[in-house]
Length: 214
Image 1 (cartoon, rainbow, N blue to C red):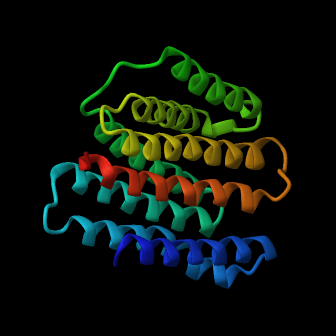
Image 2: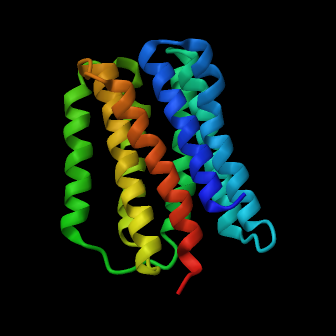
């Protein structure tokens, strides 16, 4: 599967999932949502199978944990939400490890902006998270570090741009989830949350594949 065909299939599945979520068609969500990350896994595997390196393997592990996270979160709240949070936490640990290799000089304004966004979201939801305080704090720290590491990657401009934008969109998507779940309902939440999420994972996957280009 080449990049063009992958992009067409990926965004078609994503649009179907967002549409099913918007109209509340649960059966459609159960089918389409897991296919989002499964499509990325299959594409990434075939793009790297002849020259797979350590970092590619870790990226595939990250995508697998994202797949698990999507499945757990679509199954419901309670324990499923915690398992989904844990799965995405593992995704971010993988991203942190990979993005932190070959580190470039950081931009302090970018660091401050990422930390400020995460802190604002946390303080907005802190009174509603109850027993989830520790896992939520850990997750907020992890995704913030992930985005900061993405902002400091030493690579070619195209790979840097794709991965960094993807990382920021991931932070925005998870911020919207937290606000919608714990603070107040966001209008068009499915479109905003899933729209930023599918773009985030797409850009991270495509961007990291571009890292060896001149």
